[in-house]
Length: 113
Length: 110
Image (cartoon, rainbow over all chains, first blue to last red; front, side, top):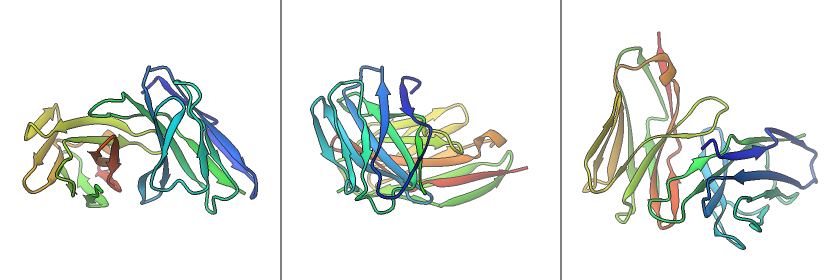
């Protein structure tokens, strides 16, 4: 998991602004994931991508967008349409084969002011 | 789809005692069950996992058991130490994804 980086560590946003969270991995993993973590809610899947130029919605995709132009990178944009964006965001990656064991980045804590 | 239930949500044990966290899953096709430990403000880290072809796996003070018939699996931590204090997540695979439980906050009391 040391091969996955996220930036920034802390991010502050004003209401109505879009922000983009960075996730990079050098593990040569094909699959990448974005999760949102709220207290007592566990890890909820936002988007995931199994291959470059392709991605699928997770359970809570509304108000978020992603791109996967490179294998190493999977940025997440939190748009102004996301009504409650304050949360801890975790990126993960895995091989694109069973059992899809996931390794996490250090996370970005987003706070809307 | 897969649903993973985890209990208890909070657990306090005396240092040196054992801790047990239990999870159930709904999809009989699930065949991979990882456990993650997350310390405060840090990333979840894989601590142990088990596949459906075995009933138990052990790694030093931690062990996981799996009952496929009943669709439940458990994490056992023996001889607990202060550094075991964290949030623990169980998970099960569903197709090409991993579904997580809501977590158990484990407190080790001095």
